[in-house]
Length: 234
Image (cartoon, rainbow, N blue to C red; front, side, top):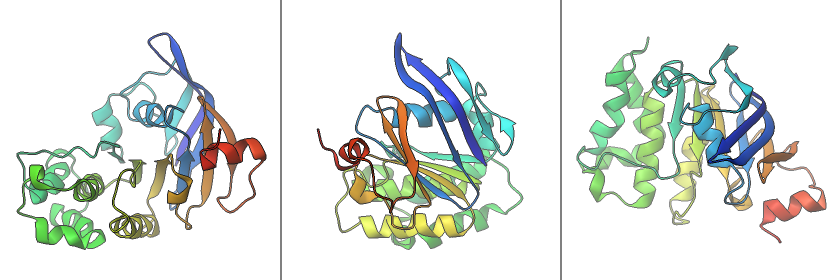
């Protein structure tokens, strides 16, 4: 579904991504793991068209998307929940979640798309009338993912979905992501904390200084140099 080949990205004359390649199939959860500054967010922002690649290719469902405008990539069926979990403070939770149904037509009725988002994060139903500015960090994270899901995407990009959250709310978000995967959506998730890698992940890519240094299964034994990155060692 998503295929990246030899992607190179520079930011202000600094090389951030150095020829990375990865793929995610329908119904798969792939985790992109790396320390802060490794290039995870740059990868996501390049997929979504916010950054331009120097070279390499990005294709979604067999169609090249590198260089396309962000709104065109979203309309093709790629949803994005950024690390900052930004919500519209002046809109309610319900309005935040409904927003993608106003901007991207889909074969599924808007009400069905919104209902599914609430089904995956049922806690949000009780906050439907609450303003975006009144939400906790964990609640904003859930709204951000639910809003991306209401786009009716075939793939979701989740940047650090567990970062900075209370341990009490992490299971709710993890269950929601597991349900998204079971629905057949492809999911690419970035993580800097190896302890947050879900046990149901299908493939793991380790990113270090802009290069993929490992690709395999989450339960595999890592080579020593990869283990240092995954565990946050020196």
